[in-house]
Length: 151
Image 1 (cartoon, rainbow, N blue to C red):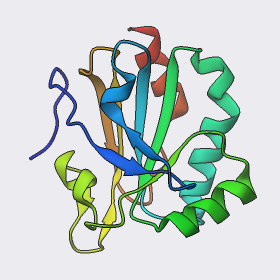
Image 2 (image 1 turned 90 degrees about the horizontal axis):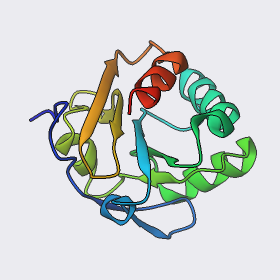
Image 3 (image 1 turned 90 degrees about the vertical axis):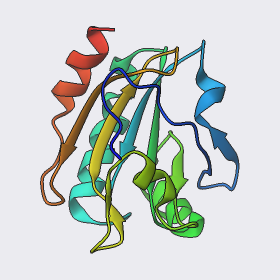
């Protein structure tokens, strides 16, 4: 079942690259969230997308947090974050495998990875914008900026 614009974002608790639990509902009332699902760490398109987000983070505003989710293990995410200098949480949806991606309707059952799905979630926990790209197609960072400006 896919999450649609106007729906309350399904809550989740996932561990980041350091093993720290991150719960979406902890952001309510404080921050807007850009929830980015991506297939795999260290892959070309994913690296390019997350580098672009890293570099654009100061322009997104102080009231925005980026949460990036994949089925990679915490250890792979830690190595990738250290290598790339990602300042935002890389969350592991490793086990149960892809559970959070499935709840958001962005899990590729055939390949066992998350699709390129992005959800903009406002401070109240409501999905205000979403986009889903095919695995080989990078997302357009300008679309994130437009959606955030509309909040």
